[in-house]
Amino acid sequence: MPEPLPPIIVVNAASSAGGTTIARKLQNVLPDVRLLLGVDAFLDALPDWAVRDDVGIRFAADGGIEVAPDYHAREDAWYRMLADLARNGQPLVLDEVMLNGGAGQERLRGLFADVSSFWVGVRCDPDVAEAREAKRPDRVTGMARDQFERVHAGVGYDVVVDGGTDTPDDAVDEILTALLRNG
View 1 (cartoon, rainbow, N blue to C red):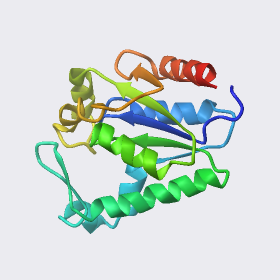
View 2 (spheres, helix red, strand yellow; view 1 turned 90 degrees about the vertical axis):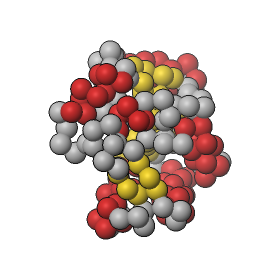
View 3 (tube, one colour; view 1 turned 60 degrees about the horizontal axis):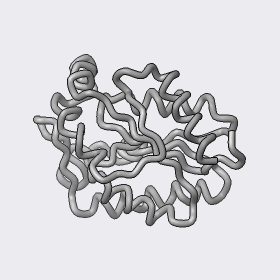
View 4 (cartoon, helix red, strand yellow; view 1 turned 180 degrees about the vertical axis):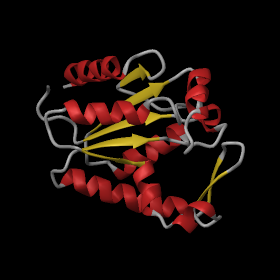
């Protein structure tokens, strides 16, 4: 592994594309102790009513996601906190769903301006992601299809893996190879 590894590794994937599985496996093979955080941890930190009502984020019946105007201010505070963790020696793997694609990436890069990051895209055929979504009680039908293109639109990656055809082990091997190449 290159020394030092980038303090922040961002794994960006649409819902049910395999991003969390790959991020967790990556976290467990890296030689340093990394916290696995990201959008789901942020949503879990919000009070239940902020996820259900129009004050934070709302999951529509068709799988679309809507955010209230003040949602991004809270989210920015979250990412500044994560950047502070990385700046202070706690490396991270971020499991993300960049709903705004490249604009979201630029926002994060601005918040992480003085912290090195490595970007992983996890793509997955939307039919495969939809089949996975249908088996998961914690997903709204339509999320995978809604997010399929938009989470990747305009995002620049250091490596892209396929969460539908690659095994998680193969995907992590591709990521490790890219980390070595970029180190």
